[in-house]
Length: 312
Image (cartoon, rainbow, N blue to C red):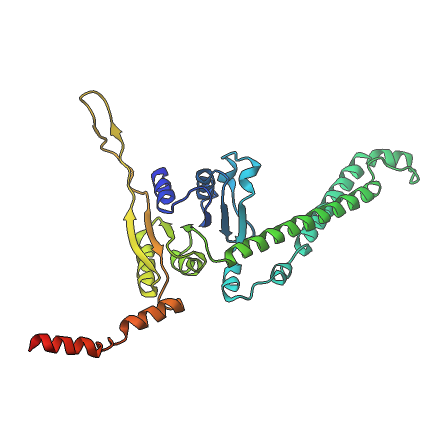
């Protein structure tokens, strides 16, 4: 993704301070960091991520203060469908595997370290034990003396893991509450996945008259997404554009565009959300429309008599 494409995404998505934005990106946090910088720590951003956790390697390079991270929320992508259906609950997060795999891995690593340490100690103390033949002596590097320490570190590791999982569960519930309001001010999608199912499901969380932007390196997926959006409705001003960048040489009497330019900036699909026909209309508006459509009432008899006299 080029910097001019990123700038167009921020402009078309109306990224500004105080907004409530939804972002789904697999660019190592580059788009997320650009949005956080544009918003300046005001507003909220809900990041949807695939897999076990969000990747924010590029976001960490921005060097944001802690105040910028207070409005950043995260939510797993595999729970979006349950949130749309209304079946999402805290039990779904608690039902995920917690400590079984990490504890087994940690136990295996600890046992491996203890075995390696025991082998080293036996090799180092082998000649002395053969010469003295004294089994009562306690070797300083005996792994049995380290066993209580290993148990304590294992317990601390499990407690720290549980604390982090509880904090992550709270963050997921906060993000689910924000998404459940369905009044986001914009949507940005820039991922390696196919954009059509992502956009069709995430548009339900965006309020009417709000922009959305989808980035893809190829135009064919965006063409399919464009067609699906036209069939679905609820969007206007759909535009599929290609970004390109050309450098210029600016010198006295020698200003001209350079011959070589970058041609792989990707494609952008942008538009605005509107209220679709399937939504319920305000009853007051319905009554006004019915009053306008009703047949006109007849004129009073006095007016008719006056008109007839004037005609005669």
